[in-house]
Image 1 (cartoon, one colour):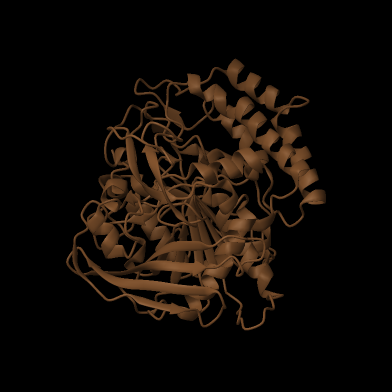
Image 2: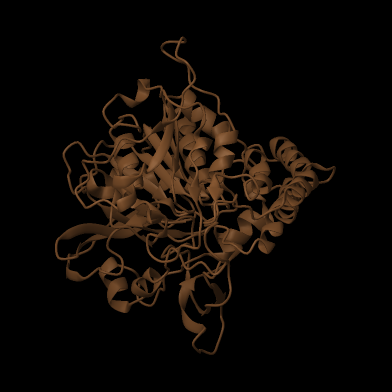
Length: 552
């Protein structure tokens, strides 16, 4: 649920360039508008909208204006483009980070799907209920009246569930058309044309794999439309931080991790939020007839037969998958409410304020919105309840897929980095450690299975390192040619907020196709050597609060 940036809270516009606004050369009915902004005294960025009429994307019968924010690489030599997708679904893209992704890469942030952030179909009057919504992110009520400290009048996207995506696949489809316009019509240097590395956090575990595989599958049979020029897009790599990917793989870990984990209490005893009896009971419920896992199987069977294109338009498949979503929430998620700890950081209480949300206040300042080219009066939406409702309550999108897209990417030669903070329960590292993924063919079949290595010290970073990365190992990683899994020590759900230097270094290494552990070897041929299991490193988990809690 986060966008890695280093400027929010400190951003000062000192000059704003004239806006570029023109019809797309690639797609009739689409256009692009963007402008240059100078921030923090010298940081250059470009923000704008890709606008598509209801005739552009098949199956999307409404107009969209999709907001993007592009940051050129600070070191542009050899830099290529990375696209970042926020989580949720419906989540925002702003979290503080002093170690920016755009140090050695061009980075494109997109508010997607429609109605997230500044993206809209139509702009309507409404009220922001600061106490509503999910995880304290608030909720927009269209047409509301009255205003007080927690009910704030403004102008927002329509909040109509019919005018935003209902599945990850349909969100990916709209993003494919967005990228066609961006590559054809955005004139600022962004590295290799028609090539993009795709990254995301949280629900990005679903959306990264879905979008990347959708792009590669579409390359083999580009759409045909009169007057349109579509081109194949390369996806050399992708990365996922604390991503929820496959409920069948992750479900067991929801029950077992609070009981059996790598943490001790301050007094040296085992850190346990569940008793063994509670852990076993939760898992038994999920595995019972009519329980979570059986419902997931029923969902996927009906989706495959009734909705093979994953458009979310078949009522029978939708009902089965939405039911699976509700049952899995009941069986696996709701019992954690008694644990007395945050879902996103097991070391903190449920009122966990991390990462902070103050960037939304800055983005809603009229001067900020004007500098970014946002239509007058349009407010920034921190979390889209309409998107979240569609994905969970209507189509049950989190239940629909396993790891097929990830396997497809590896077999097509796309490198995938999985990066998990080990204090997170919601999209936890234990689920990724448990679930093996089919590996791409090896150049040398005699390679042994990959083993865990401690990451090489990040001595090349330009800023002072947090103490933990100089006195203690920051992470352990396991790599098998194209696929790597990294456990980041002392990091919660928003991995890059807790351990920004570590995540930035991994990102840089993947973007230049180096190995994750040292950054010196060729990534595509690396097979790590070391411990057989990354579970052996243990830590102490106390109540750690404040900025950079995981670093102490």
